[in-house]
Amino acid sequence: MNLSLVESALKELGAPRFRLDQVRRAVFTEAAASYDEIKVLPEDLRRGLQKLAPLMSVKERRVEVSSDGRAHKALLELFDGKIVETVLLRPSASRWTTCISCQVGCAIGCTFCATGLMGLARNLTPEEITDQVLFWRQYMKREGLEGRLDNVVYMGMGEPFAVYEPLAESLRALMDQKRFGIGARHISVSTSGLAPQIERFGKDFPQVNLALSLHAADDALRTKLVPVNKAYPLKVLSNAIKKYLSLTPRKVFLEYVMLRGENDRDEDADSLIAFCKELGPRELIHVNLIVYNETDTPHKATNEDSARAFQQLLIKAGVHSTVRQNLGRDIQGACGQLIVAETAREKSHARK
Image 1 (cartoon, rainbow, N blue to C red):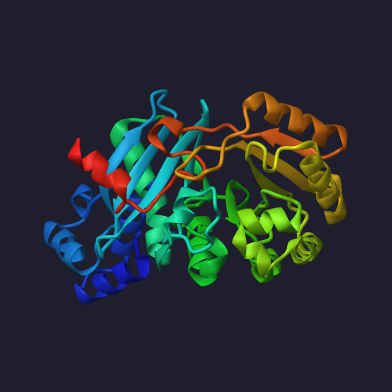
Image 2: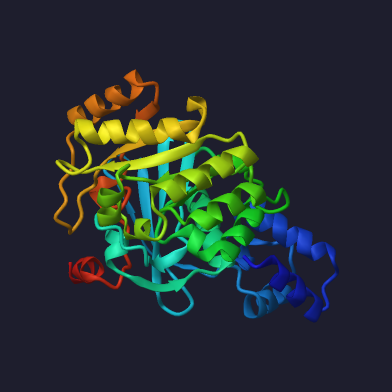
């Protein structure tokens, strides 16, 4: 929802100022999915608002639910007919997290990521970014899902730091107590390594979590897996993270997708350990190991036992590490599996 547009529409319709608070409360606190649900508004005002300031910038195309009910993936249609995917996850009985997108597709081109294989169609507006969170709150109300959605990760489609201004505006909306009211420490932003924006992010949002999609601690291998490493190699990334840590005491999360025979060897662990130790205090660096979710690429997944063994090498060397849960694999909603929907997957689903 674009609250500024709603305010302008209310003025144009001659409504008193208190109507804005009624709309804001109904949408952001009570998860109203349409103006018709806001019964405190006169019917003619509801019709006028729908015409001048549509409540949502995204429209549900389809929602899929994993077999265990812990992952929900939505295909959302934008005003121009383009599609983004977003995921709602329940990591534990009391927690709900959404993984949101900031672009239609992605230009970074990580070789193991389905989104990267699709290329970039366009950037999302701040409203399109935050409306994904609104959509899931409305969905939870509609489906009777207990609990509150108060964790947001920018780890869906796209590179957040490539759209820094829309990212920043969307973050301010999410943290605004009169709108979403989500605490900064409950929001995480992931980057593939756009180093100049890392320091800026530390200055602008020192309490929001930063995650770096590392995937290799050797320049040759990382450039092969994450092509942006050619522009911002590991030394540049290391310096950027050090500057970031000088601005905020927040922990940095290093994301590491494990690819069998490529980055899961003992020597890869040694390189990763050396990289982590160079960054700063070990309590501020945490490695998230992710068992690869296979896509239409030649890469193969490290098995979980090997991932655990790799983790133990890190822990013995004093590097904090976890093996992340992979939720939503059966609906292709896990890490690295989101795609632009105008693809064979969407067409195949439509034929069924």
